[in-house]
Length: 170
Length: 105
Image (cartoon, rainbow over all chains, first blue to last red):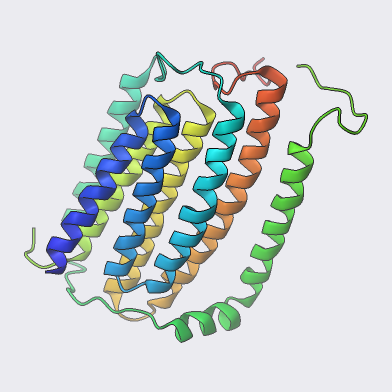
């Protein structure tokens, strides 16, 4: 039963990922990204990681995709209408395919070591306790990272020339 | 393939997602497209972390805690990267990586 569910969700995710990297229209690519992220949230549910599925939905589906769509809205220039791939895209295809074969070979070769079929979930309480007790210092550092990124994004993205600063023309 | 849902299934799926993202990073020319492919790769890594945690049994929380941190850093990365993209677009009128060669000698 869970295997069938896995195949359905995995198919949706992989198809969306393929659509993401092959889409001509970049807005379609962003929507494919949304579907792929929702698929990964579904896989988190299959792994009994409900909290992470919620976080995935809220942060990735809710925030990151919306921000990317806003950036696309502000930077649409129509320059990628005809050719979007780099000239050396066959090299990229060969590298990716080679890495995939390598990773699959390693996973299948080692599958005897981890042949447990039992999935154990994590309770919200355990996750929260671990996060705020054992990982308290990394948690605080993460909040500083977010603050620095916020301030940095405001400074970098500030409207140039709006406050007397000259426009930089490279 | 085992008839039951095992760790291998998730590993192969994560490998597929990671390699698709890698192709996107290497082959596409739009900066926003590259950013979205990086997000896909980060999701593949998260999937692997959660899957290993779920199938190992003991010490299963650590994988999920690390995923929380990865998502945090990814959010910060997207915000900052999009600010830089805005700046580039305003300064050069393009988001094509072939045009962005300021540091080229």
